[in-house]
View 1 (tube, rainbow, N blue to C red):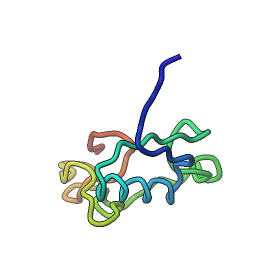
View 2 (view 1 turned 90 degrees about the vertical axis):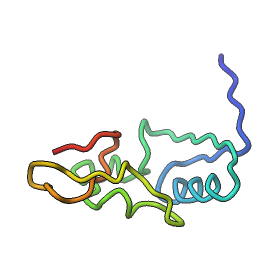
View 3 (view 1 turned 90 degrees about the horizontal axis):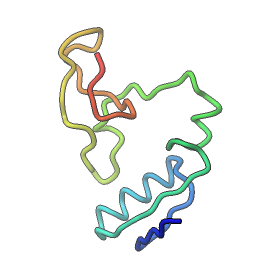
Length: 94
């Protein structure tokens, strides 16, 4: 078994856990380990509402103005000209 070390352990990666962690890292530069019983972040939303996706630009999901995403705009498709959306990946989907 591999041993993991961090300054803080955050249990639960729903909205509150993620917002707390983003602020903690931004303000202190600490190493944080996140754990959750689900395979991806989002809390109960992942199971209760699998048909929903976040449709706002990634920049809107930061805490304390922490920039998210790569500040790119969609080049084609129905979102052409709009900033990238939170996709769960690092690429812009068209």
